[in-house]
Length: 397
Image (cartoon, rainbow, N blue to C red; front, top):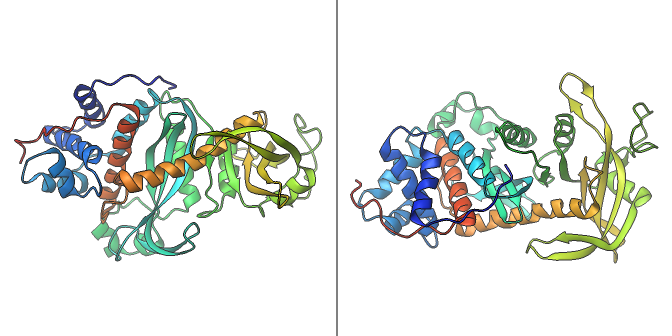
């Protein structure tokens, strides 16, 4: 689904977009309020409460209650809307990678679904929050979140009363974050007509990345994953490619492997920073064995590459990445890794300007629907002209 960005024609384009996302809804009023919700996210400056969104795009005195009903209680399937968003985005965005990004949503109190206290490495402190995990389609034009998971600690999935209040589905169970990440990747891979792209992520601060190395590799997903410097990695055997049987070599840490066997690429690799500007950096890389688990076939190790930006002052590698795409040029691998930082910049912008943090999120369905709508509004704002700030719901009650 590699596509071209097509010009929009204002109101008609926005209407076509919302009809595509909400056309599966049987009731016309549901489709209408979905359109109003998206328009409110796009048109409302500052904090995007339901009241302020309603006031920005409609004169109906009961619009905020209708929006509340639409996002929290109206029985619509967010998975269907997300699938349409994947297809719409894929037609307009040249997808270079699927990027995963954990998203911390600070909360007050203990009533928002999934809220818990956890140490957030980037903030250096314990935060009362929800923890979401987003999967983005990422390209040069930007990044669009197309699917989400909400981390549910044991105190939420194991408490029948908490589940009832938050309307957590009976089939929803506690999952490790790495398992949720795999669910997201497998779900996107199952989308019909979508061309696979490498998975790019740094989840070292929230989960064990070893299953994210073994299982995607065994299922044929290419990846570029940030890893801990202490991750045990076996050096690649000689010859690096084409040797079916070999005795396993004793593992080293990822950092030790780079320092012992790494090849320097000084001032030749061009990558893209979080601001989108190219820059030259020094890089160190080494072949490494990639462990894999293929369903029904057991372990299927093969050769990959570990690499990092080189700090010429401290003479140490910086953030370390592991990939099972050793045939890619180093500049291409660095460009893929750089998409991670750009995705985090998008998450921050969605929190500050896109309404990501402006929803109370007490119920499980409400949280997923709001995240779906924020994602859709961001996609439209990125890949189409801004929606006209008209008031289409004057007659709605």
